Image (cartoon, rainbow, N blue to C red; front, side):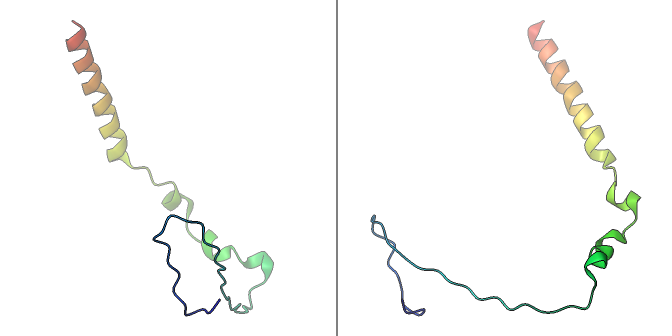
Length: 74
């Protein structure tokens, strides 16, 4: 197929189309063993950051919903 041609997909019928792509590989001078060092440089507490507001918000929501359910059932 011509890469600049337009294919009509509006009709409800099966159409055969061929898709291609190209890729260019860029060489780097980092050893295979050291390729993840860039991502491992962050400190551990930064990764395991605790979102206290979300935890408290979830607990309050559970308590409120439990109280509403108890009120309805009484």
